[in-house]
Amino acid sequence: MAENNEIIESSKGELLNIFTEEEDKKGTDLLVMSDFFEVFIGKIETEMGTDTAWEVFHNIEGFIGEIAAAIKGGFDISKMGMLVADYSHFSQDIIDGLKEGIYHVGQSREVAGNLRPAILDENEHLVKFFTLKKAVNPASVLSNISTLSMQASLQRISSQIEDIGRDVKGMIDFTRREALSNKFIYARDKIMLAATASEEERELYLKEADTYLMEGLTDLYSDVNAQVKALAEIKGPFASVKAIDSVLSYINEDMQMIPRYVGLRVYLFNYRGKSEDANRILGEYRYQLQTLADRKLNDGKYTALELIHKNYPYDDENVDFWLEKPKQMLGVIDSYETMLTQKDKDVFYIDVEGSEDE
Image (tube, rainbow, N blue to C red; front, side, top):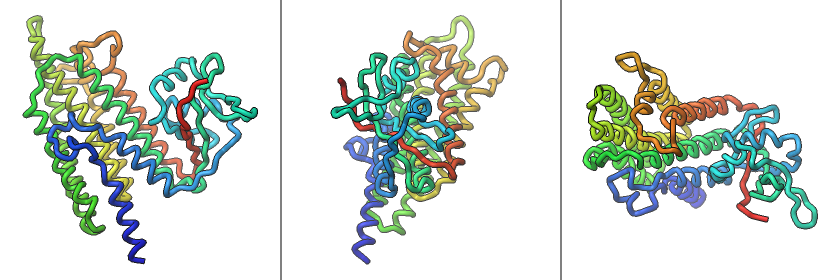
């Protein structure tokens, strides 16, 4: 019995081995570290695979439209139940191809004439195989699958904000950046201690880690609002481009850090079996995004996102980013919340089998 308990303890500790690179373990600048979402997604997938029994669902003919929608949007709630795409493993090219009609979901004839579910191009050539699986016990996997989808969405928005941030020419203020990273660093140290601690000590360390993450997230939300107000005060035909770029670079850094704080808090709450707290953290993130999107600033002319959009040095590939992407993230959070209400539905999982070309 003691040996079994040790195995369980070891397994639980392994799920906290989030910090794998030297910079992740010892660095002090959050934006130089790994984004951690790949780690979260991998850990969730591992836990989901061990805790869940799946059976392969062979007849996809009636579900082709729903499967395509699931891959494009992360999941689709339909008459067949809850359909969830493992879209952390679908490239953006495939998602965009399905949206644009270049790719479609169908069945590809393998060797020996067998038909297998696949994503095909307009010439019916194979792009990627997948398997449709049905959960034997859907209630036990709903939390993990919804969290998997949310972490993938947070990863995408964080990466996109990092990419668009390269267009801003403001100087990096490393002192400011490290100050906003500090609470994450303190939380990291507590999580690393928790990974090898006893069950009782682990819970104490994780509570302390969440306190730091909560404080850091509060600082970031406050800083975004302060930077937006500063941007609103830079007015007139002689407004300094340098000053505008400096403020935009701060906003960009804040908006990159926030999903990382949110993602780690959500991961740890789900790890501790506190799904309601995880949902609350996402609700707070949703509120902050909604406020930036909807609430007019003091002069009543622009919202925060409209003001950022008005001043941002876009290129041809990212025009309207600050108007469109945060609203898309709001839609993802809304969908996540809807997913969690579907506890009486079947759960189907689109499992990617690897990329192949014919």
